[in-house]
Image (cartoon, rainbow, N blue to C red; front, side, top):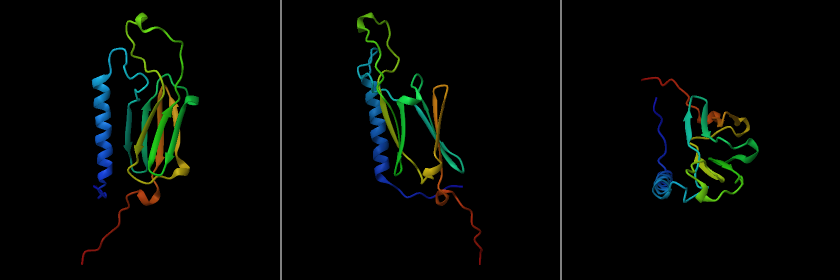
Length: 146
């Protein structure tokens, strides 16, 4: 069943900004990572009847270096910059492993029950389950026809 949603022009502007950022990343990232530390993990965001689910690939990042916050209708996932032993770039044949921290923010499509949000991490996948607030769940009501 389709839901009617209030049109938000600013959400479309944010989508355009995200698309533009991805395009710039693809255009200017060289084999050795010109924008080192700007890589962000890919995510899946979907919903079922009761929850909004966010899954992010965060391989090699420990739970202690991850932060997940919820502010108003915005979910933010970030990781601290983890320093590794510096190796001179001329000694590299290929450098593809992500280094450095990241921050990603997402506007949620509906209100969530903040007291029941849960995050788990297994095998490099961060999963955040955001239960929908009761008022955000679709409710079927019978309408009598006169």
